[in-house]
Image: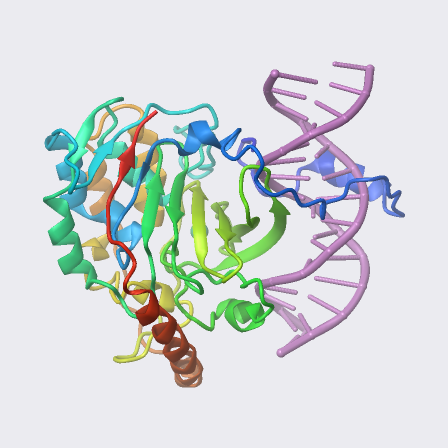
Length: 359
DNA sequence: AGCCTTTGACCAGCG
DNA sequence: TCGCTGGTCAAAGGC
Ligand SMILES: [Zn+2]
């Protein structure tokens, strides 16, 4: 991706023109459908993915990232990797970093969003952090396996953040089966889970493609917020579970108002609760909105880690009041949630582990 | 009407 | 220069 000045995501004039010119289509031959199944798995993505962090399912990546504990621990707790406990290693940035942070003029655009905050902490390349400590706290704040969310693992790299094995439906991106509509429509997701990886933002899918390194198709999403060019790539397996999520850029706005009703997850807001945790309530609340923190975080990620906290705190979240339509949505969501929960429970048995790998 | 997903095609980077 | 690949566009259609 390419970065871009500030108009990232926006149709570039040149492009537009070009496209306009070709309207009638010529249809050469690009066959998107040429699905290739991971043959050389990892070929291109390897570098990027190599470094990753696997987190117990139920944890929200965002939370992770936002969690001060987590961050601080990453930074301060270098320790050897123990077999039983996770450790994090910070990879050095890989090539593809680009970002997009239009808003922060000073920062170069780059890609990463949630993750950014994550990696930003442990930027020392090659360093290994012990996650023992932050885990507990995270769990606590997150509320462990949140219903409906099946985050089984998260991968994070300095470049892009990757969340792996998120539960299906977490993302509002459509499941393979086609039930997607429920999830996506109007930014409401059926599972509501909005995706753990989700951060409580609204996303619009703008493309899908079979990526060579991955077995599953990758979906591309953009933040629907005006002026926000954050993007994310989501990969889902045949079951609809999110296997990987990569965020790019940082949000320059607050999360959409969640409609949160006790006991019910909300659609867009569902994302807040994806992990059974409400961003607004947690420590991350304040600013945790991935957006803000991320945007800046990633900026600092290359450099120092000190500022993370500031950024993390700087966002103020409005606890949104409930909207009217909220109820109807809530109902709808409830329904979805139930489904999600069911599946979640079945998946509960998944291994909960944190694995960090470095290149 | 508005917003979203789907989907085929185009574009750009890279080897 | 060519082909591959990832990313994006935008028309079409759904809700
Ligand atoms: Zn945004």
